[in-house]
Length: 212
Ligand code: CDP
Image (cartoon, rainbow, N blue to C red):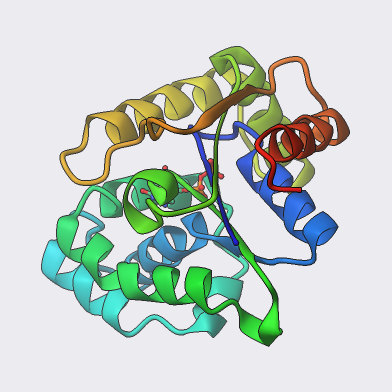
């Protein structure tokens, strides 16, 4: 069974997808970490994140160990990731890995939960459940601001809100695999839901659709 969790910046996709995977005993893949790793490695090599030849080469030699880099959640890496993610050659280079993970989850797990922007629309259009997780821009910016502060980044709230809006706009406007809900996705607005309530809501959707 495949569960696709898509949505805009800091909507709570990762928290929900990880919790769902733990509850169901499924494998979990944060596909944003692939784009973040390509961005971080491109920047570290002194290359530009909008140089498609450079980024494609990095994407093609990505290994699972690269997804553990400790700079992946830096705000600058997130911005560069959304530039990298607009490039068709990079997306194509990362597609097989994501599909293999979804259809043959590691450690013999019976299912996989993937979160990202295009899981329900492009990577796994055949997913049994598609969730589109969203929340108001202010709520999302507040969450990301707290997350970055807790990580010790020096950052101001207005900047976080501006970066979030820029990144969402770029993710929605790009030609390849733009951010949008799949037609058969259930929309889950987490503006007023904490992590536990979001998990309960997702489990209810699974039940309503006869998947549990
Ligand atoms: O956690 P956050 O919502 O900030 O972002 P992320 O999921 O780590 O993704 C970082 C960036 O990678 C996004 O802004 C997208 O541009 C890109 N991305 C994508 O294009 N497709 C995916 N399946 C996942 C991420």
